[in-house]
Length: 337
Ligand SMILES: [Fe+2]
Ligand SMILES: [Fe+2]
Image (cartoon, rainbow, N blue to C red; front, side, top):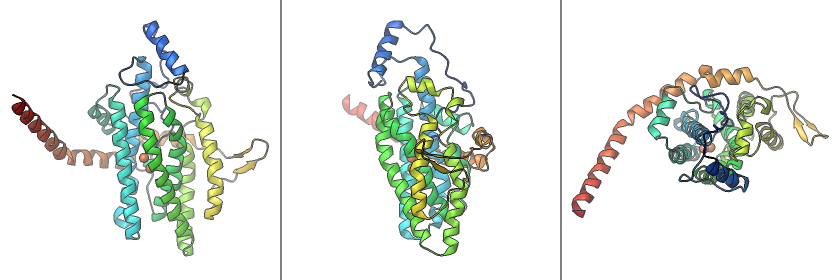
C-alpha cells in the first residue's frame, strides 16, 4: 500500500505546486514537455524541471513512509493470528510492505534525496503518510478488512502509477501491484471464512467494515475540486486518474464483493444510479480526515513513536553493515594495489 492520492502537502511543503519558474532553460523544457506529451518516460539522468522533481520526491517518499508505517497496525496481530496458516500469510504480507518501502525509497533516492533525509522528515513529523494507519486494529477481522478494503483501495490508486512518467517509480509499481493483489485476496478470503463461522465472528467482520469503510474512501484524497496539485500531476503524467474517479471505481467494484461476503456497507445513501451507471454515495467526513493527517488521529503518536524506536533499535545493524562494507572496500583496494 498505500496512497491518499499523494498530493497532501508535507508540513514544510506548499499547499499548491509552484508554477514552473521562467528561469528553466526553454530548450530543455521543450524537450521535457515533448517527452511527456509523447507518453515517454523520464529517467534519473534526464533533465527535469525542479517542480517536477520536488513533486515526485514528496509523492514517492510519502508513499514509502506509508508502506513502512502500514506494517505496524497489522504487525500487532502476528503474535495473535488464529492459526499457523494465518500467521504465515500475515508475516509474508507485512514483510512485503517493508519491501515496498525499500523499492520506493530507492526510487526517490534517484531524484537526489537521501534515505536519511526522508526518514528524518518522517521521524520528526514533517512528512505525511497515509492517514488510514492512524486507526487501531481492534480485532482479528480488522486484519482481513485491511487486506480487502485498504489494500484494495491501494491497488485502485496504484495501478495507474504503473504508467507514471517517472521511470523508476513506474517500474517499482509493477511489482508492488502484483503483491498488493495477493494482499487483497488473502484479506477477502480470511473474511469469507469468518462469515461462515458463528454469529460472534460475523459480528466482528461487520464491525470492522463499519469502522474502516469511510476511512478507505478518504484514502483517495480530497475531492477533485479541493485538490490543487491534481491538475499539474495529470499534466506531468504522474497522476492518470482523478481522486473522485478512482474513488468511484473503488466503490463500484466493492459493492458486489460486499454482497458476496454478506456484509452491509455503512452508508444509507449508497445506491445504484442507473443514469450515471455508478453508485451514488454519502458525504465523507473531511474534517476527520484532515485532523488525522495533521497528527490528531487516535494512533498518530503511537505509530510515530514505534517507528522511531524501531529505527533507533536498528542503529547497530546499519553501523555493522557500513563497517562491513568499509572493510570489503579496503580489502579490494589492497588486492588491487
Ligand atoms: Fe504495499
Ligand atoms: Fe499491501
